[in-house]
Length: 338
Image (cartoon, rainbow, N blue to C red; front, side):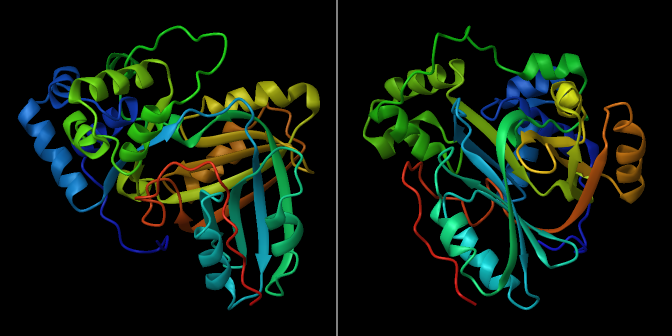
């Protein structure tokens, strides 16, 4: 969706209801109304209206593995060839995020890949594509904040705490997903708010079994939810990626500071000439200026580059990924030799 398209910002009540779903994607209307001081009937009606036209989707994600296995790509392309390259990348399930710079000549993407592997996309397909003029790949070493952890800053800390479901203490290692887990996750991928009865009917399992399994997955942190929404509806018109270089002994502190900032929806330590990456959403260019000039001061930054996103092509919950099922295999979709 183009960044300059006219978008009407939602009123504050709708923004707060969206923020409530960020705390708990399967939140009930009664609990939301109790915490936010709104009638449950109004909550249900406003949620239905937001979701009816696709403005808001709640999608399910499996737990993040201990080994991240992700590469941040910056792909320079010839003008006029952008659409073909982005379409080919968007068709790949191992590329969950794709952005296009406001300048129109750079694609930013996240590719899932086994750490240390010679990924065919990076080592073969992209370099061999004539429309691609350069590829910069930075491996994610550590995640300080994932996109699903971002919270729209319109609720108080007390409200967020009250709306966030408690989790059991972590165990000595991630539990493996069994066949039923995978079936439940597959049914919740496109709509994490699907009723247990609906999931049960689709999986052929008793409703009580499915209800208990969903509750267990949530409690153990193995079922995560993310609210997919065009953030311009929330008044956040500027989407930008900020690449930073900081001294090694300042890296962890700087990353944690970024993760705590309400504008940052992604923060990662990476390999490459820039060792810290932040994805930010802000209201306008003045807010972006304050972020880079004031909010980043004191972090020991020696070098910085900022890229404004002109188009968000693919992110969790976007039409290109809605309806896909949880998979373990990687796509072999080739990038066209455009």
